[in-house]
Image 1 (cartoon, one colour):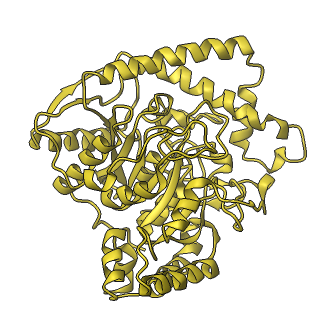
Image 2 (cartoon, rainbow, N blue to C red):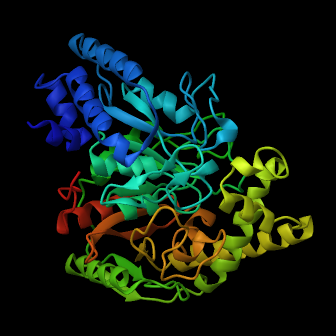
Length: 469
């Protein structure tokens, strides 16, 4: 097998090759590290690469496999986003403010990945404190989309999606507070799953009203299921984690989608602007589900138009956690858009916040009631294809000092509701840029989303597409 093919091989296949002694974990890890070192000056998907740690783990994995040890990810490389704590590896949040910060313990799902035998390659890039949907930060600069240099790879899990698209191994962890798994998956042409809120424990628990979800970014649905099987499950450090045994994620992707499944399709949620090429590719992909025997209803959800005011209010309100850095020596070192976003939320009163929170819960209730009539909801993942990463909006969209949400209206509603949602590639624009289809499920029905994504993957294959690097 060529080195490049090995770097793009799914984890499920790599495990078989490792078990059959066709390759060793050290050989696999060295091959991927060589690819990363070759491409990184151009892509900039890592903030911290840890080759020594990775190779030590790979050697240990080979010894354990030789001794008959059985672990679900033994010898498989994985990356961690630079918003999550990793013992002995800096976690810097894409910010000069936290530069060099060294955690003394792992966040729980990182401990689970290590215990499962995963080989940790390092930390992937994120915008400053994960605040925006564009792959740039004061700490690391621009992270380039593998499909077009200098273009947005999405965020805040930009480096993770770049890694999946560029062949930096099979498994990449992302987090999603308003679309930050699904947006980079869309922009980079890979699969990203935002599970039901609390399915994967998140510690320290973010101070954003239970908006942040932890999940996988991979090249295949089966690899996402494999990664979920290790990361999911309750943990005492996250008091919001779900107190339930993880379901059979791996088994879900092997089942055929149910005939007569009732699916809603909303091209705009009743209010969102979508670029014509994106809209056309998404609409065409919906017919794939019709061909599988699903019932499709094109809908305009009642909850949709209420979203923008809520999305912008809570985004600026929760950024007030960083307001202490304003008017200090740090402000000039921060992302100017983040500073503008923080300032736009200054002055919100407790009464206003509580009132808007009540309206948000009414909005969430409408989402859940809407989903009572449907097994799944399909929408575009994002309104636009990739654009230059040195700007917050595409040139043909209205400009704003901080509001990148204008082209990402499809994602944050399902952070509010805690629903599972995925982005799966559904085609390319005339410029060769990827587009994603969003698949949303009922709360707790992660298996339904994975099963639908797996069926779509079979009907409309995409994982063989690779950017020219």
